[in-house]
Image (tube, rainbow, N blue to C red; front, side):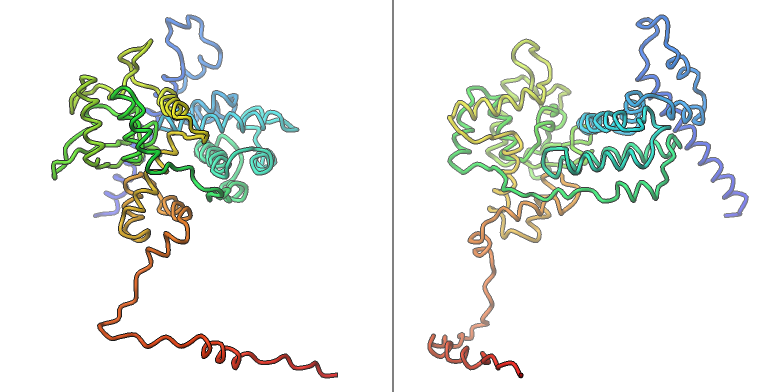
Length: 400
């Protein structure tokens, strides 16, 4: 291709990219700003935002906006998944509170200095409670926000400073065993519900490893029959954690429980109706994640259990049962579990291997092949002890 043609194509790509960024910018501002009918007299900030026509003007506004406005623009512009938006927003609002309480205070992005980031990193490490994964999420949210705003030159922190201040993310290794259910407890929990909806929710968590948000986000169009005739679930990017889509096959027992609920709820395969709907005040609406949590914990309390079983405990139970029933606890079994659970990295799935006891690991060890030849006769213990004494040299006295 001639050099002039390459230059023209590169210029066209830049114009297309800038136009796409400008359209995204307008979408951000349109989502954030209320309708004129709701706000007859716009504030000064909103009037400025309506006059934005270039990304350069947006950079200057973003640099001077208060933390809440900047965080809201970032969540709308950058984060697509609603669950990620909720968790990242909560962590960034905590970081903004730390920045405002610092001395000197950082009231906006333009006033942010490396010292403020160091104070927040120290706060996360020493004062923020929770598991290591909680601290890891707090740092990841701040890093994502600063990288996004850095692209608009909304702060003066260089990429090298960001890597130095936020490059080391706290490890999320598991320090205590997962809380899982025994086989008898699984049977008792599945028999506890008195309706098809609650039984199907528990069955999808225990028998397919679905997260709570993925269960309540399912619709009839997400259920389909695979090439082998078995029922499958399409966990699309809109409901999957981290926008990691996957296909989850269902076993015969989970399939039967789910089909019974679909018939009872009047939802057919391919419909655009939520599979799990509210049955009380907001009948017909999609069930919320909080309601799914309450369903699981209510049946746990009714069974008289003293341990704290959550929807994610059912997911942990599925993962460990998957590995125990697979052929071996490593290799392709881990890879298959990663695909079913929707993990982005294999190291996340490998944490489950730390929860096997030594006896289970010993049973999974392969035997050595003998090729039909008999093994040598085992030596008597007296001979072994005698050889061991010969190999031990006595301590020599130190020279004067």
